[in-house]
Image (tube, rainbow, N blue to C red):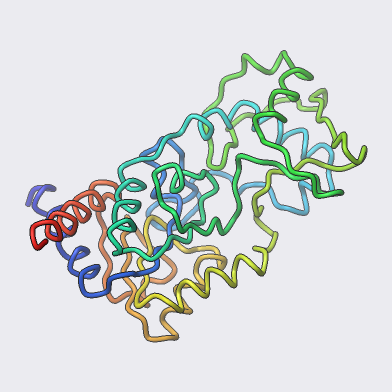
Length: 287
């Protein structure tokens, strides 16, 4: 059987789920943004593709760890900064505009759902485009900090490396001479991306808003996530505990496979684009 009939069949099953459960909550992961050129963390079995990212405690307790992080970020963040919404982001924004999607809870930190036009988005793990002083709480746009990093470390600007998820780079070197400026407002604070690192906790207010979105929705759709980390998996458990139907569009194994009413293993962007065309076209024809 060719891939085209399989893709059409997959899109049809997912479109039928959305038709039966309109105004559903959507939970997205890295697989939504891979077509925008942003790598993901895990393979089809849910295992790490690369070394696990830096832990929160490691970043906060070690100057050497921060040197390594910001040096790699100065090289790798270019990919995240240049990324533009893919067809998956656009399709979800269109489905929201048509009233078929109530909102998006995303584990991604790239802001691409908003750039595509989605209006109700909960950035579960924060946004990588800004940084926060861990001493005084000051916020700063990340590109501004990167300009200061580049000014302090001009010899790093010609480095090239393979981009990693969340603006990191696959780069090993002697980082001991890399200069990391502190917060000028308080004079002693550490700048950290305004995102939830591994080993840190999602702010309670953000979790409460995400739980409320799922409570209000009639069903949940998981897209492009293995749900291997609890911060996302908890919402599948919440929906299952409330007997809400759950569909999943993901290539490969996920932690919540036993909870799904429907699982579709097909390319994310192509499938969502076809679903959007089916449902929006059907709605216009009916009108």
